[in-house]
Length: 424
Image (cartoon, rainbow, N blue to C red):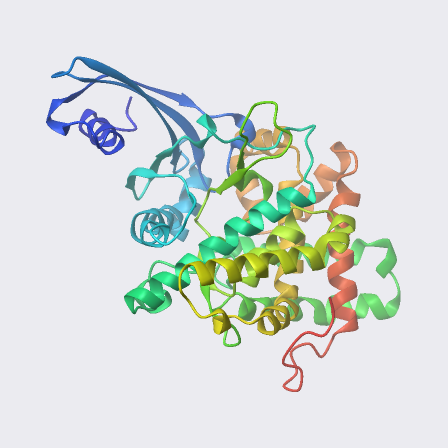
């Protein structure tokens, strides 16, 4: 196994078995297996690591299992992109430097344990031993959304507690770690995505009038770039450590019994986009990326209320002033940051709703072209997938319509007179 040397494997085992005298541990066997192709990430490759170790003094053997994220090894353009953006350097630092400090103030498990990290690899707790994604035939209910919102509220409250009780500012102390890897003008993936939104909007059958086409060609792109301001640390609400990538593949659920219909806990994975920013971004990203537009409109108010009550509870549990984030402040901030949620939905829907079989094939068979699609021009990719995946065009046009309708109704969104967005 060339991923990890024997010394690294032993170190991982020692960190996993803290109750065992580390001088008595030896690694008997190590095995690496490729992860499911359905889990192939845009910013890495996934593997499972199995270690068989023994406590030679007590003659007790342990079988240990881990989840590994690594820089892409099979796709050179993808690897170069990850290295260029510093994705693993950031996530490694978040796992090792920030999350353990925040976990101290939480009453539930917030993230998978990280047992070892380099700038090209993360060895994490294999959550699938106790948690799982929802299955294909299982759908999100209001209870699922509420459970994730409770988890997010505790992550946010615990990050505030860390700052308040240890007299520090997360942003100032970890500014070099919590860099923006998503909505940033220096990110070619993001800029290419904005151009793809303009491309799709120009094709939408409901925007073929002269007025709509003029808006799309002359104003849309510049308006979209304004969303970068919304993901920077907020000046209008208490900032927290946000996960910033709460789509369904990054949420795993725990069920008390295999036959249980509803989960009793959840856990978040993938912290490469984590940022110190407005807590509303986590809340809105969940509701816009995971819920359909129809479902979101039905549950929106109840979900915001549930999140805020949970946040209040955790702030009180931690002995913190509830006025650090008032309900009024939170609701106004949800209005202010709505554009960011709409944009994230429009940016990510074409990739998250593409069948894995299609994206994996393109990445494997046409790596250079796939890199071009992601970081230069997606128009050809979108047209290709529309031809071979039934319903794809309709799916990715849904966020485009909501985004364009919203912006056309609020062209003066960022004028000096308009501090907060006025519509939901």
